[in-house]
Image (cartoon, rainbow, N blue to C red; front, side, top):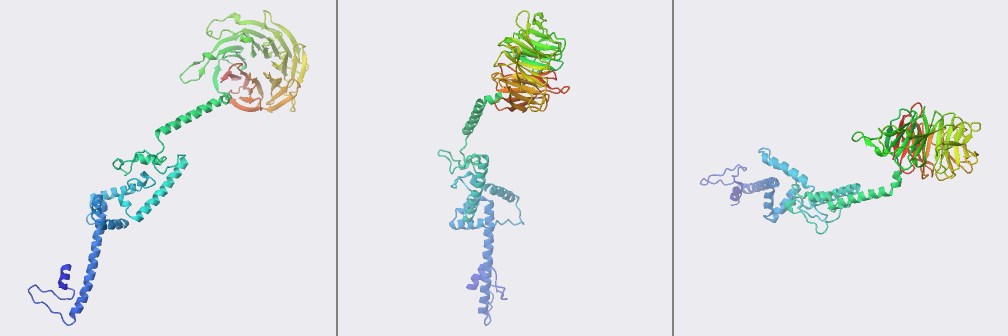
Length: 568
């Protein structure tokens, strides 16, 4: 019975002992002595080996079936529902390496599914990104059945979340919160994208744990704009210190020697070496081309001098202006209406009077609105005081200076004492004169330690007894009118300082030089707050004159390049 059962299990006859199984009806062979025990022991060994082979074959079939189940996920889910033993086998099988299908019968559809499954497995590595810290979400059940696999996923998830936290710190984003805020709708499984998780949850998780919304971003933008506007409003005074070019006046044919602003209007008067003075209305600027700079045309040209016009001064209330030239004459002009047509006919009444008395070129002019007096200095070595009002202007006083100080170069009225004037000379001297006494009061210490150098211009502080001089040795000096001592001295430019102008409030000083630059100085700490390169050199000369508007935020410069520039 035992042999029959074994043979029936093996499905074949016992040929290993050399005994041939007879037919059912034939005679049965009888074993020899000792053959039964020996045959049975050999048969037992063969049966055990066959059982091992059968067990190995069954295990291979199960592994092959497991790989097939991995290719077809819904079969695996059906297999999981059969029994608890199959669940345990599946968990063990997923820990083992996947066995490829035999190459004898390749199936293209299975290879495509294998590639798609590999892609899906790679994508499912990031399933935890759509879940919360507590493991919420819908991860793939195949990756969470084994305890070892779960630990590996947990370590990867913690590692990648640390990387995301570092990225949030670098970008300045808010830290990720542990869970979503109450009331936040959770994504449904059927609403998840093709990656196996909700794309909305993934995006919001990467930028701050789902706490940032469009409304919050809009609030941030509005807040930034408000901060910027506050900064601008609080720094208006700082922005006024920076001047930008606004107009370039192009009409003269030679260098411009002097400038003067209208007292109340946006108008400028220029005096040029081409023998003319021109009046500019800056409010009548027109744009020649689209997106081009503003172009200004002069509204009137004053022609009477027989040579270069070297100096200009604006009279009281800007009703009259005065010009001095190389022809040794001083002309008094009536300012025409600023709204006049520049192509109107010539009006002879514009030229009011001619003041004669100097024997050489008139280098400088200054007008005092308080005393209604005009001061002039000439290359003939004299400083003269004029009364320009009335029908016949006359010279009130003459100060001969050639014998004591040389040729005067510039003259100015002092602001604190209207009866005093200050004159500068080519010898480097600066002298304070009393108009009523008709004599020199004080010689200011303007030469300094560097020796005598020519002074190109002298100006007076609008509210302090202070005189400021511009020198050929690149320096600017500040002199006290009461003691005559030098208050401050500094090297201001890279070349000769040619011109000076003080703003009406006495806060800033503007200087021009042959180094082609304009510099704005703070009179409080004597430091340069802005430098502007405005003009080009011509015959080793650059900037000849600068001016500040008495009542508007306008400054101007004039140079040897025949240009005048206005800054706002």
